[in-house]
Length: 147
Image 1 (tube, rainbow, N blue to C red):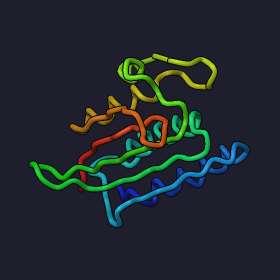
Image 2 (image 1 turned 60 degrees about the horizontal axis):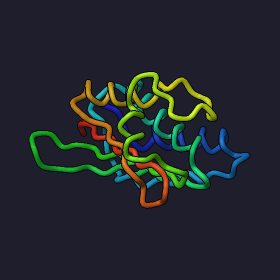
Image 3 (image 1 turned 180 degrees about the vertical axis):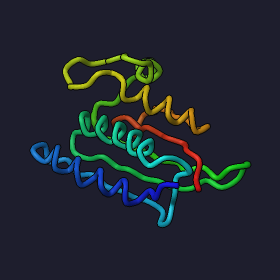
């Protein structure tokens, strides 16, 4: 079982330093007391990849929110990472989670991050979906089992 808020807070502190020269602001909205039913290092890998990807593309803001959705057989965490960058067209969003697929070579990376997040989420019977953000960029929605 992994506590959500401390892990995300740690990444926010790190990414604010990494992207300090660009003046990016990382905002969070996390329901208190949420926990992931899984390994801490797997959660760190997922949130780290999503937050770093958003930071690479954001113009000024990255928003991370986590809520719990009750119902069904297992309560699920709904983790959303939104940015205000250029976003991706619908066709490109479908391609972005394929292993090694880089849609833009101008930013650093291996093209593995989103596929790793998707694979890890699936291994926990969760999912990763990419959509357009209401802030203009990309919205990554990660569903994972809650503890």
